[in-house]
Structure formats: structure tokens, C-alpha cells
Image (cartoon, rainbow, N blue to C red; front, side):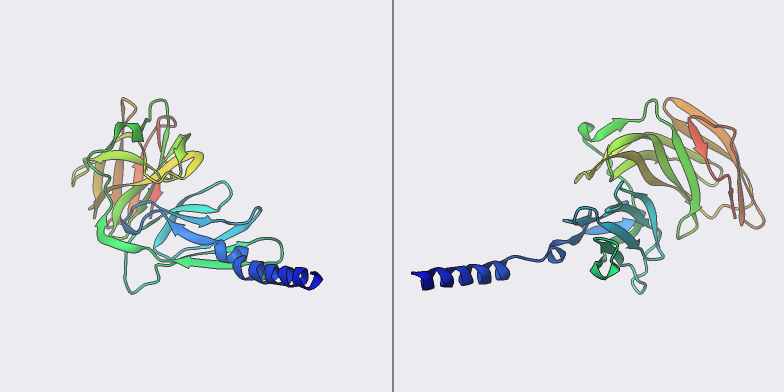
Length: 254
């Protein structure tokens, strides 16, 4: 009988050692979309990370961070352009403690839907929309990969999804910058957070030297200023007097 008990104990240990996976094998790097377009917000998430882990993200040169989750286990980013010959891989180093020898590296590369700029669907269910009433917008201008003048738009209020998107209508043309911000879209596969909404907003590419009116409609009000392009369209200066409602910062791009 004793021999039988010993054999059962040995078999149990062997079974557990074979079937129990190390924690590092259970960790994965997941992306919020299988295929993405240029400028489409993408969430990269470390799933099943151990408690108290530290995350160090390494992103390709064409990717731009929009936002991190509070514990940095998730990052919201956009690709400003796509080159199939370039490195487009997202990597993260997960460190479970001070000892860096325990760190685990995870990498993943998104597939590309097309090389067109991302646009939100024309029809979105009403229960996926949140009003921007009473909020405040900060617009950070930068140049997209094809020289399109683009803004990173961020709210001052918090919303429920990391992968939220600030909806807008762009009426910019060769004579003006004109954008209307409408609402916050809580996209499918919501990653629950309590953070400001952050996303990109495209205008148009290749502004010639000159002065252009800027009109931003938001929360039932239109904010007006102008954009001065000079030095063979290498210097962009926003004349923008507002410190509430809609803020543009920085006001100079070189």
C-alpha cells in the first residue's frame, strides 16, 4: 500500500510539472485590431501580466504614442505612415521586479488594411457616443507622414474607454482650416479606463505661404483665429487667443 501511495505522489508531481505553464508563457501582447490604417488609434496590451510588473515599450519610428494606461500595461498609438520595408513591430519589456534578469520581451506587428488615412464609420450606434458638452479640447499640431497638418486632440474630462475616438468633421481646404468636433466614440472592444479621450484629427497637406483663417467648432461655439505659413512653408504660426474651450499648443511648428 505504501508503494502505491508513493507511486501516486510521484505521478501527481510529474502531471503537475507537465501541465502547469510558467507565468511567462501565459503573458501575451495583444492588439486591438488585426488590420489598421494610417492614423488609426491602436491599443497594444500586455495580457496576464504579473502583479506589480513594470513595462518598457519600444515602438517603431513611424509610431507615435497618444496615451498610456495608468499602470502602462497598455499603450494607445498611431502610425504616421507605413513602409512595408521598415520595422513596424511593437515590443514591450515586462519586468516583474528590480532584477532585470527576470524581464520578458514580447513583440507583435500589426497587419495593414491600406495606406489611406483612417476615417471613422459614417454610422455609429447612439449608445456608443458620449457628448462633449462642458468639456475642453487641447489641440497639439504636428505634421503627418505625408505633410498633412494634423492635430492630436485630447479632452480634459475622463471617459470610459482607452480606445475612444473624438469624432470630427473636417472642412479644411486650400483657403482655410475648418474643423467641427462632435462627440466621443467609445469603440468596440472597450479597454476600461478612466482617462481623457485622445485621438488624431487630419486637415490637409501642403500649405503654401500665406495667412489662413482657422475655425474650430466645439460645444455649440465657434472659435476663430488664423494660421500664418511662411519661409517656404517651413514655419507655421497659430494666432489663437483662447485659454478655455479650445486650446492650441504649441502655437509654432518648424
